[in-house]
Length: 290
Image (cartoon, rainbow, N blue to C red; front, side, top):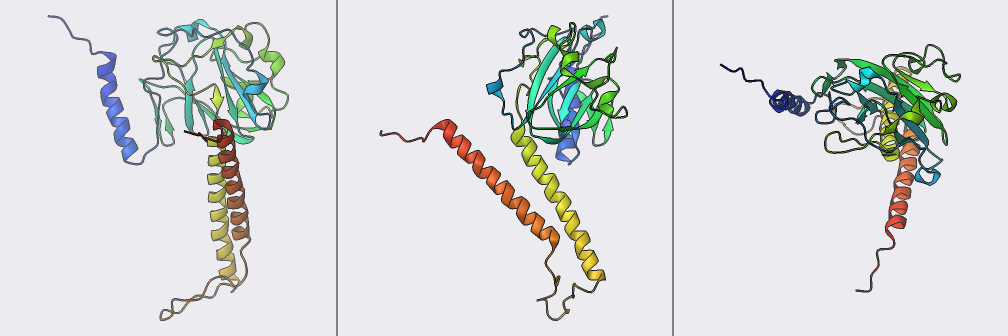
């Protein structure tokens, strides 16, 4: 009697169903189902490494290159680890590959997770968290992030504290000179996006970063406002209303947090107008005589 071996699709169905259930329930599910195939099943076949042209990115932003040098370990990998920027999944990095992302200046959170049949974690729990770090990126600069599970770079990045997460471990920030050595990024191939391993890299994620930065700053200012109100109440500068007269009350002095919130919202409104202007310029005036 033959034993029937379940297919990969059959194994994935309950996991995908569970992921959907958790998403609906409000949990944060980290997963790369359908994107995590490794080089053993799908070797990288893109073009040889070359820097992207200067006119493909805005020097007001920053550029992140991710690369993974060849190793037999990585070549035999069934599933490739995922790369997240600011908690958003963008690609799974396979053996002997590179890709890039244009990001907004500021503090960018970078994480890598190793999947199991595409699933990687739930909320703060991760099956295998490879890297978890923040990187302060500056306008006009290019950063090289090297991933290798077998060997660390021979030299540390001079701009990083030795205790920084990207100065140790499997994912590290390296200098341009180091990345451009033989058998480093120059020997890798572009990480294509295709049906077997789709990804959302090799593009600008600046607007996503800007929106997230706005939301984070607004959340911090709302917390600051709540603390400021508590201080005013303690100082007797926040008279309460009577139960029979619901009008009045509130702080007797302007809130510094309110001023900051108004300034932040005005800045974001200008940013949205600038986006609209760029979209209109890119699409033309849209006027036709017919």
